[in-house]
Length: 529
Image (cartoon, rainbow, N blue to C red; front, top):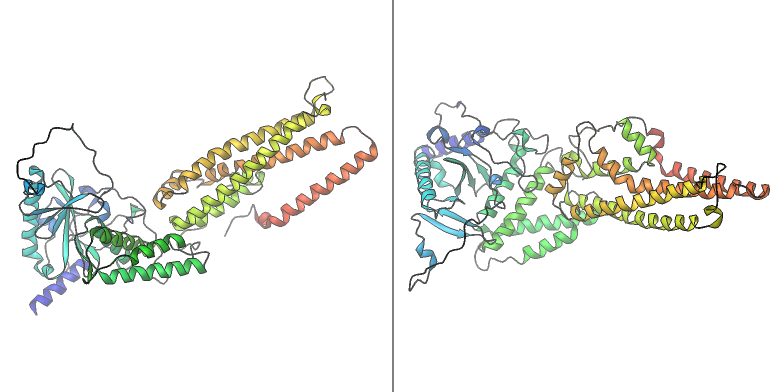
């Protein structure tokens, strides 16, 4: 019974380790910044009658951190020149040459080395370096002394500890519980709100799935612990449900397309555990852990399990509708509403600052398709203008002062230059879309962030994206004006009248089509509510 009471005490203390209004940035999508000593809050007073000292009270060089702060894919560069290597005779196992006492060396399926202490402590520090190993052993001894003195009940659970050298003698640490699929700490840990997580998360319960995401990220980068085969079945259910949602809904919140998830499902089904109840292969464990990490993080982004869960990819839960500036509306009016249309499309893609990969890909593909069509139209009207300028009556036309630049000729020149401008800008934008069409959600988010301004949002970006459309449309209008000027200058009165009536009819038809296809024209200048 005393052990049960102590276990309950430790559990309550760990739950109290989270303060209200604490946030953390997700691992797979947005990058984390390595925390230094100044980012961690100081230990706070315990409210229970028998307070447990925090870990930093005994080991001030240890600071709480998140698994996502381990930058596995930012490896250091190889240094030094190659040297000759001498291998002694009869050495059949190279690993025997590097004795590391209580430490064992492992290599992930991707080839990155990590080290495990016999007491279940992991690190990616170069333990084969004697100086690093000496400092790490000293830290491990102090950590073990604290655990045996103040957290002995934790040894009844299946948990692991990770140490990460931050700078100098400072180390980051976290613990993982395989029973609850979560991470926890032995200090009061406040996750700053500037980690760019989704808004509206105010307590630990709402942060549950992000903790699971961090847990699975740990399992991916330290794939020592075997994963129960039941996790494979859970992942299969997630993928089957996601494929069904994508097939039956145009506003699915799933982070991947149907073909991508079908490939994932086929891959997961290929994972076998033979006669063991666990998945033991490092490659299979890392793959399963990565997918579970992504989908747990996805649940966090969509407020899974909350009354305000997001069920529609275009549904905002926290963002306020931002009214565009008057200048943007004016430019959009000149460009026939194209910037406003693009602006509303991108708003749907970046709901609450969250970019879903599949929605971003659709947005880029749609933009690229429109630009390719505009390039064809612009090239066509460039040829038309060149042919128009080669007509004798146009080429020989002169104004009253004898200068060779009649109205028809000037308008045709204007149309030709607008067509060339549309082609140039369109080619540049198409090249950019080839880069951003296959980028990750984090890269897309960084791109949007770099092109977003405090006072204008991403209005300038949408104006740039509308330039090919505006240039092409105004080029067509300039050519029609040049053609009308040539046809209506001189000639018989009857012919002139017939052409004027015909052109007026065409002009009114265009105005009618624009009016019917632009339903928001009446509310174009009014603020959105």
